[in-house]
Amino acid sequence: MSPRAPRRRIPVSLRRGPVAWHRQEPTWRDASPRLIDAALKRAQARPTGNWYVLGPSSAVRTDTGYGVTVEGTEIVAWRDAEGALVAGPGACPHLGAALAQAPVRCGTLVCPWHGLALTGAPFAGWNPCPAHDDGVLAWVRLDGHGREVPLEAPAVPDRPPAARSLAAVYTGTGACEPEDIVANRLDPWHGAWFHPYSFVDLTVLDDGADTDVLTVRVSFKVARRVVVPVTAEFTAPGPRTVVMRITEGEGRGSVVETHATPLGPGRDGRPRTRVTEAVIATSHRPGFTLARTAAPLLRPLVRRTAGRLWRDDLAYAERRWELRSTGRFPG
Image 1 (cartoon, rainbow, N blue to C red):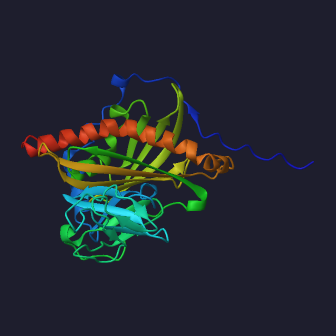
Image 2 (image 1 turned 135 degrees about the horizontal axis):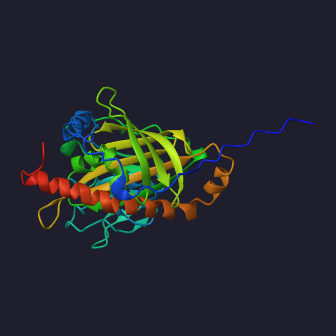
């Protein structure tokens, strides 16, 4: 008889018993404002090549314009006849009509006011912006705002291969600046306290002061006692991006990219920043192939989970901006 195949390790664990929220180990001593600020400053010193995330690649379509404001500048994006990403000013060069939802016909954007057609080539003072589609996110390069040495393409973080992963993208907007979003992500110590419905048993293994890599052991909460323990690393490759990568446990190799795009001030004068969070999940388990097949059903669930977390994290970021803008921020 052939030897029995070893059992595959079940990815979930049973906790001995739930710990009351207020009986967790406090993390405020470790979550040093100076430590978080130092990590933020290192991120802000890294180049972006003037690239900004516009939104999910799937949001830019072949039949209508996709509009977003970046640093107070209207941008419109669409797909040309070959499906390539095109981006440029979001105002028609004729009389300034908004092109955000202008129809696209055979790869040409048509102004709804008077029918002026834009193919993506320079025309009547309208000039395209460099654009990049990485398969998950759409990017635009704005040299006038970034004021850095331009790069040919954005520095897209390493991701699991598309053929072996499932990607979902969440977007949300907060009354804050990009640094407030990045600071939130560089503070993993708040996880189990601020998000007890999702995280438990969080321990920071390396605060990144020497390595520039925050390493965290944490369990994702599935049910009252059922959890999925993982080890994850947080890095900030640029001033508007934080990447979390699972290095041990279920989903090893999966990535969560958080990108912060400054939109400009709202009508109340407060800044607005759009969060675009890309979850690129992968797994070595055979059943993950079935999960990829069910991607259209799973993506809304992933976005809903991210949205619940960001409901709280945007409140964190907005509060941080409010304290900074009024000179009341500690440190």
